[in-house]
Amino acid sequence: MNSPIPNRQVMTSTPDSSSSNQAAGAVEVVLNGRRAVAPQGSLIGLLREADVRLEVIAVEVNGEVVPREQLEVLRLQTGDTVEVVTLVGGG
Image 1 (cartoon, rainbow, N blue to C red):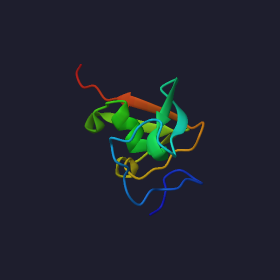
Image 2: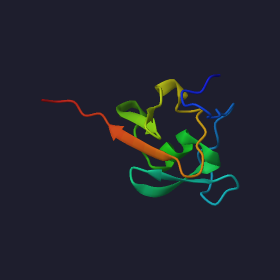
Image 3: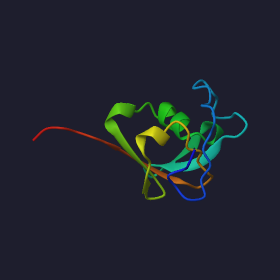
Image 4: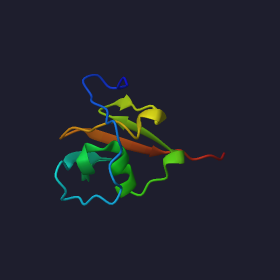
């Protein structure tokens, strides 16, 4: 599986969403300007811990948009900057 972000690994399985922040493999990142921990380096784990609704967001990692189909498999690295934008409809 190709990664949408250069030099980025993808996971072959998703981590258990009940993983503790203190679990081995936790990765420190910046999420919307604040320090956060991605369990096992998992983008989807980070999003679950942040309690975001996946169906109404767009995600960037280090300025690169992450395609929706890659959210569950993208592996983050220490120091990555993750931006989550909520899509809002209306006029």
